[in-house]
Length: 317
Image 1: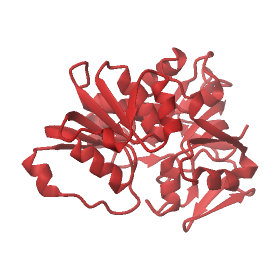
Image 2 (image 1 turned 90 degrees about the vertical axis):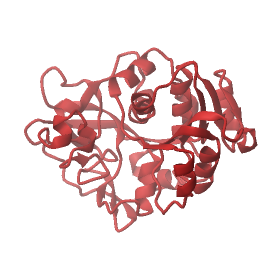
Image 3 (image 1 turned 180 degrees about the horizontal axis):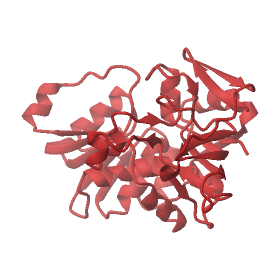
């Protein structure tokens, strides 16, 4: 089969990859669409020593699996877990000690014609959700994970730093809580997407120091971290949604003095994400910047790495 293969930080389009055979408990999925994520770009830069097929945001059709899923459109949770380690047994399976992660850790990903995932990871896509919209399920679930970790409501002041792909989804999901929300970024056209939904936006200069209860950092760069940090009141909470390929320097003493809570946040719940897409409470269409065929995958990655680009989709099946 055809797929985008990463090895030694070099990406190549291959036509000689064997079609996977699903082991017991897993399904074979024919990939329809897949989205290029910042994590994919960070893997190219050496964020994690991965070799294999990239990609973890996808929609596909089950070709081998249980009868109730055959020929159904599905999305899939990316962590394949063991079910018996201390994290799995304590309902924290995304930290499974023996996990593989689709397109990230020891499991071939979605930038290919086929993939395999555990049947338990798959969720059917509602009929009224277009395939390209459903490709946003995984990052939207990641955005929703914040609300699993931090209490958010009308009495909270929240700033989201970053107007890129993830920042846009985080902002739209947090806005549904009714909190006092500000989203800051560098791109007026991207901020306009959020303003059209009634979300307050601004540049970094709009951030009032030591004002916010919660900061969410979605830029993945030191400047964004600095803005998110200075925005927080004492005993505020700083949520990190971005992976960093390099090291991040910070003033640890100020975190101690102000008693700041620092929270890492990644994978989240799929069912609520699909519900938001099915009910159009979140609008992802303005985030789609370009579409490429799988055979144009290298050009798609070059486009995705361009400064300021939002979501680039690969049309595979």
